[in-house]
Length: 287
Image (cartoon, rainbow, N blue to C red; front, top):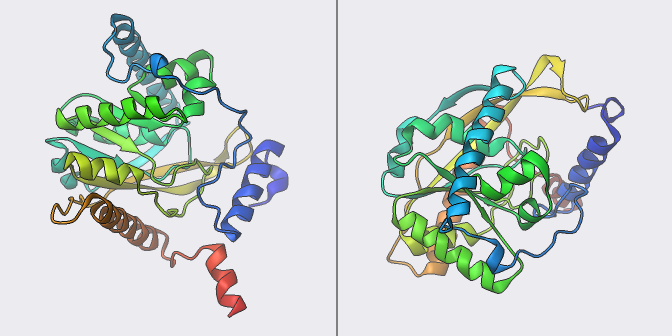
């Protein structure tokens, strides 16, 4: 990609991604986001117990749907297809879904493609603290009220978060997590997974359904930053079930490794290339 054709901000992001891949810093942020205020327990109504939260949630879902369906209709957010819907039977009694994180819109791609298969009509999304506390306007409203479960540096808030996740899964809800942690803009490779979300799934005794979104350049159009418009396909992979004969630590690690292996295999199948990171190539060269 010729970075001179991109906006300076996006070119800088791609340069950081290239640098971080070479040094295996896969879970570090590449966006130039401001420092986020800490999310305190009283400011996160995870289960929408307050009437005001219920009202804002309903409005946020209506606004979010209208906004993203508009992007799809205008061919700004392009979804070419979905495969593997036969694996969504695992949603029936509550499940955790994973997705590669490369865009602010990737969660809607997942939701749009699976919504008719959800036993309940909602898909909860685990989001970073800064998305919940930093944004204003429409995006800020959606981040706070559109079925989101924000993380936090605050220990008491995280206790409430974990309790809410367990409650939602126990009642058959579906929750989307990003095991790669940070968003790397338009990055195609699956990155190493963090184990936290898999611990929550193991604790709740629910399956994890890995999903992987592949991308293809639109050869005729670029976006507002000068990057080719991306055409997306959602791949729903076989569910990974908790092995309850193991303890939480070992069981969660096993789920994490199995989910990552499925995403790696799908990457190699679709892009027809082995999954090799720049840091791996450097190690091989040194040897």
